[in-house]
Image 1 (cartoon, rainbow, N blue to C red):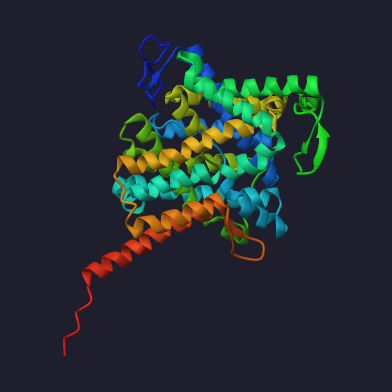
Image 2 (cartoon, helix red, strand yellow; image 1 turned 30 degrees about the horizontal axis):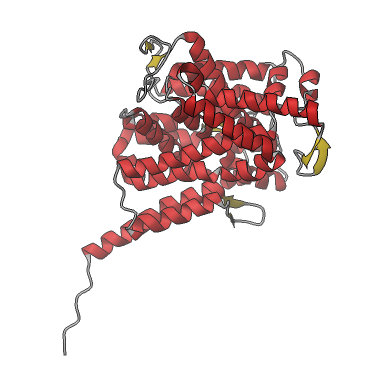
Length: 448
């Protein structure tokens, strides 16, 4: 375990080209700011996905903090990561609900996936990183990172941006300025400043212009204020989320097991992205990362929370700030736990206007996607080779769509999960066919 972070420079600033490595930190007040930024970056998705799946969002936020701290302990502080509620399970959980499954059945199925994921991580750790290199070569890991980022584009484009296009545009532009032009600490927390700017802008616009006519949370066009603090006023200051145990049903477990492939690929893509950004060799910790994700999911779902996974939004924040210190993530985990225990603060963050999230997530998702391209460039991936080009291109389009592929009458693989499976299996099938062709070339027919 790593708790002894070295002070980076004077603890106040970074010179161009510098990064704060996982075992380093800036001054503690600055690290608290970075930790809060990570919580806010992940909060929307970690809050929304449990709601979509019918689970307690406040419990999901609290357990995401617990799972994040467990993750950091298991990887010995070598891989900075926040783990929050996973979108990969939404389709499968919808199918379980449609078949009559309740909260306990849902969390039981998610817990089973966590166990399988933890076992896979342990196997990867014991057999060595060469297993990962064979299954996830640079073309696959770069592609998975790219489709994770671009595969979330629909969230910004279809969910957040249409709710308030002008606020989204102005928030995005302001975040450009904060990240790109501000120096020192302020530039490093540009994402947080962008969110605050958008929140204040929305509030002032409500005062000056009144209500906006736009889709509400249910998708219906209504007249409403951009900033609604009714939930904050009604929420308690201190409260324990509702807990419940899991129930295991084989039919529900079978529905969610295919998601394991996507989760392993997401974890590998995250580790690869962190390695590329920090310049550190973190391959030896890939198995631990997958194991840690599985353990976090088991712990979270055992009390009724949502399954967890490494978070694309936080990769984007790291890419923007160049601060990869795990100290920020420990702080983020503690803040998330406190949020989970304080419904009023959770309601305040949840009150962030959709237009604001649209502007910020557009930047973050795009940066994540381009990190995948960076992995390709660094490893000189040959995209003229059809074995590389075809499954990667198809996987990205399936994720970006997002395209849904029906498995049963009530369950479909879609988006990132479907794109990841097509990319991974497509590449390896074509590669196996190529090797067989090279090993047994056709014998030229005799003339005559």
